[in-house]
Image 1 (cartoon, rainbow, N blue to C red):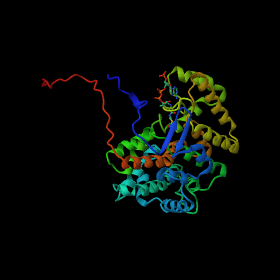
Image 2: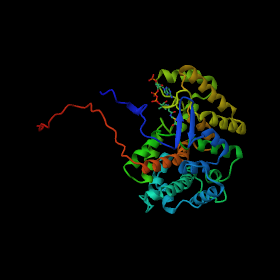
Image 3: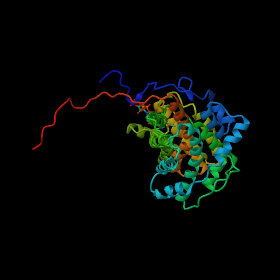
Amino acid sequence: MSEDIRKGLVGVVADTTAISEVDPRTSSLLYRGYPVQELAARCTFEEVAYLLWHGELPTPLERVAFEGEGRAQRALSDRVRAAVDLVPTTAHPMDVLRTAVSVLGANDRHAGDRGTDVGKAVGLLSQIPAVIAYDQRRRRGEELVEPRPDLGFIENFLNMTFGYVPDPVVVDAFRVSLILYAEHSFNASTFTARVITSTDADLYSAVVGAIGALKGPLHGGANEAVMGVLAEVGEAGRAEEWVDRALAEKRKVMGFGHRVYKDGDSRVPTMKAALDRLVDHTGRHELLALYDAIETAMVARTGIRPNLDYPSGPAYHLMGFDTATFTPLFVAARVTGWTAHVMEQAADNALIRPLSAYVGPAERHVVPRT
Ligand code: ACO
């Protein structure tokens, strides 16, 4: 095999981007030049979406116009609702979301018009929370909650999910999580969206593909899988023994490790602080003790640190979301980054088509079989 092969594209710089910068040396993450921690401390999620798509934070006038555009598109059409209802509740919510985005694309007569991609992204950002909220409610045997145009993005999302706007601690932790999840350079799902866009396919197709890529437990599915780890370990006192056994069995411990960050994920401290506030608010200190014990054991044994999915999984649990809904919440945030990359790729496109080194049988010829 050639020396040039980089399995998993490890270390390969595939293109330039002006959307975000991940620096593993300093464990830092910038969106359009702004540190993500600063955005999480000072901005609304809508402002961050605007920043990713337009390159600058909105002025007050731009913010009002942008929010108005999004609020007007929050209601599910009968067709999308019918499509959600067609998917059995035995299917994973990511399958529901993938189907719903596909139906949204099929119903957009301008799906292939590159000039309206920002408008389509705004539409998806409004519709995806409605699908997630409706799906969780139907699984619980609850009725759909209609959107409220008087509420901001975060409050409306939570109201459509739970039927009420929760305590400000929950609202703020949710906002922080979506800002941290919004964008992360050429991760697997974003790269999938760029590959699809590079064939000049439409934005919806790119997002459907990205949802498929995010579903896997090595990527977005990890926030859901973290709850499985916490449940399996059960109590803080069992963490060391459990981690030792998992490592001996060569299992991947969900919520730990990262392809780019090797000294810690830049987003974890901010999300952990939000988790701490949720723990204080809910009184679930035993969950935090369990969380800390697994992290301590894992870092002591391997030096491998948590990624964003480790604090966000239990945070979503404490907010009241069903575990299977966690990865769709990641979609609700990351659709901003995906679509920013779709627009960047389309603006200066080159078909993404790497080479492969063939290792199958040498040339041979068909011999009629008797
Ligand atoms: N648990 C146990 N061992 C691990 C873990 C883990 N979570 N992560 C890495 N390792 C080990 C590997 O087994 C490997 O050991 P080896 O050299 O003895 O074979 C070594 O660390 C290097 O790991 P790689 O798998 O080569 O690292 P890679 O960059 O390919 O993987 C990945 C990164 C996929 C995220 C990995 O750490 C993993 O599977 N983590 C668990 C899933 C997860 O949490 N995913 C979320 C990613 S972040 C996000 O999507 C927001």
